[in-house]
Length: 507
Image 1: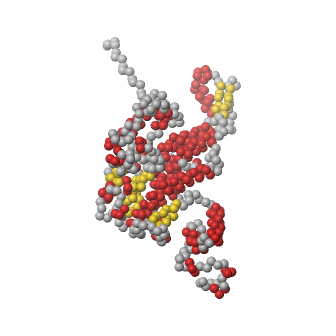
Image 2: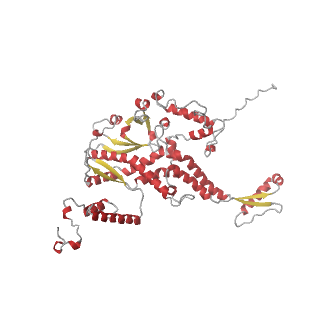
Image 3: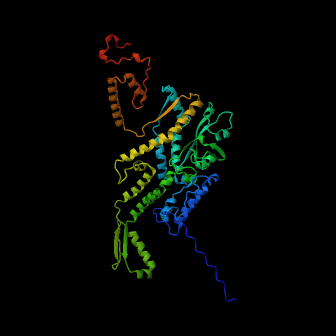
C-alpha cells in the first residue's frame, strides 16, 4: 500500500561488438581507440610469448618504445597501425580450417605438385669425380618409388609448409640396442645408423609440437642458432632439431618468432583477405545480375498506408505478371519507371580480385584459375617464367637438402654403399612441359651440335651414343652402353671408306 516505489536500476548499455568485416577492406578502422588497443595487445602478446629465460637477456626484450602509437615520433596513425597489426598469426587449427577453401588449397598445393612433378636425376660419384654404376642409382630410385614414397613426401613437405608456415619431416632412424627417446633427444649421429635402421620419412603437423629453447639460443645474438629451437617437444617426447628437415617458406624477424611459435608466415594468412574479397565479389555478381532491373512505381502513398493489405495484393499480382512474357499493369494515375544497372566490365572486376589472390600467393593467375585473366597480359609468358623461377628456388633451397640426406640414410641402412666418399648430386628436371613439336625441334638442334663437335674432333660417336642413352627423351635410352674396351671396335669411317672384305667384320 506504500505509494512510493524504488526506481529500477538503470540497465547498462551493451558493449559494442567488434565489427570484424567492417574493417576487412579499408584502413579506416574503428575510431574509439580499438586499433590502438589492438596494437598494444600485439606488443604484450609478443613479450608474453618469449621464453622465461629470455625476458631480461634477449635482444628483443625492450624493442618497443613507449610512444603514443608504438613509434619513436608517433608518426603512424592508429588506424593504419591497427590495420597492419591485425594480420597476426592465426593459429594452426584456424589455418587448417581455412585451407579447406578451394582457392587457398589450390594456392598451397599447386607449387608443391609442380615442383616435384617431373622428378630429378640422381648421380653418384666418388671423391675423384668418377661416376658409380647405374645399377646403384636404379636401385635407389626403385626404393624411393616403392618403399619410401619419396615424391608423395616431397609434395606434402611443400604443401603443408605453405599451409602452416612451417613443416617438419622426421628422419625415422631406430638404431638397434639404443633407447629411441634418448637417441632422438641428442644430436643426430650418422655413424650410429645401422643396417635396416632407417624406416623412412615421417611428416608431423605443427600443432602436435612445441618449441624448446636452449640458454644460448635465447641470450647470445652472435650464436648461429640464436632464436632457433634446440628441441621440438612432440607430445611429451623431446627431439633434437638435427633429426628434422624443417621448411619455413616465409621466414620472419626474431622479434615475431615467439608469436608465430618459431614458424613463418603462412600462405593462407597472406591471401586470407584477398580470397574473402574475391569470393564476396563473385557471389555478388549473380545477385546483381538477378536484380539489375529496378522498377519504380509512382503512386499515392497515403492511399497505400490507408489500405496496406490491398496494396500487398496488388504488388503480388504485378510480381506474378512481371516477366519477359507478361505485361506490367498499372493504374492510369500511376507512373512506372525502369532503371537498368549496367554490367559492363563486371567480369573484369571479379577476375581482378582473383588475380590479386594469385599475386599474393606467387602463383600465375592463368595457372591458378585455369583461364586467361582479363585486363592482364593475354599470353602470360612473364608470369609463367616468374613461376618457374619460384619452383626452381623451392627445388634447390628446400627439397634438395631433404633428398640428399634421405639418400645418404637409405644407402647406409640398405647396405648399398656405406662409403663416405660417395658424392650425391640431385639434378632436377625442367619444370615446364614442352610439346612434342618442341621436343623434336630441341632434338634436331642437339643433333646438329653433335655433328659439329664430332667434325671438330672434340667428341666421337661413342660420346654421342652415351649422351643419347642418358637422355630419356631421345628415344634411344634403351640401347646397350659401350664400354671402354669396346671403343676400339667402333669404326667411325663412312661405309664408302671401308673395304668390302671388312664389311660386317670387326676392324
